[in-house]
Image 1: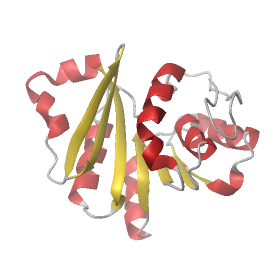
Image 2: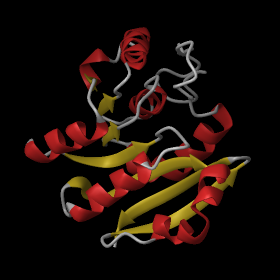
Image 3: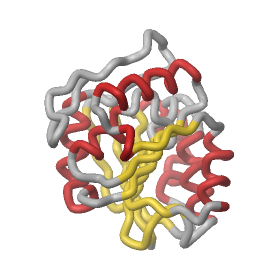
Length: 193
C-alpha cells in the first residue's frame, strides 16, 4: 500500500496485521481520486472508518488542507499515527478514536463541515448506510454545500440487501450521482439533492 500521487507520492504506508482492516486497493484508489480531483484541492476531509489513514493521507498528498481520520479500533489508530508520521503530515491531520456515531455527534456539536467524506466501513455491516442516513437527516451539517461522500462497499453486501437495494439510493437529502464497480468493490458517490 502506498501513496499514489502528490507530495508524498510512492511513500509506502503500513497496514496492521488484522482482518478488521481492509485498505482500499491501489487501482481502486487511483480511479477514485481521478473522480475526486475537482473536490480535493484545499478540502477538509473526513475519513470516518479510517483503518490505515490511506484515503485521508492520499487526500493530503494531493492538496487537501485537513483530514480528520477516525477509527474505533486501537490497532487502526496506532497504524494511522505511524502513517501520519511517515508522511510528516501531523500538522494537517487530526486522529479520533471514537465510535462513528460519537464522532459524527462531535462534528455536529463543533459545527464542522467536510468537502469530502470517505465511508469505508466493514463490508458486511450497515454502518455506511446508517452514516448516510445520519448525514442526510442533519442537512446542511457535516457535508459542505458542494461536498461529496464516497461510500465503498462490495457486491456481496449489496446482493444481501436484495429487495432493499434501493435503500442505497433513497436518502431524503442525499442523491447518488455516480456508481462504479471495480471487481468486487463498489463505489457510490453522494451529494446534496
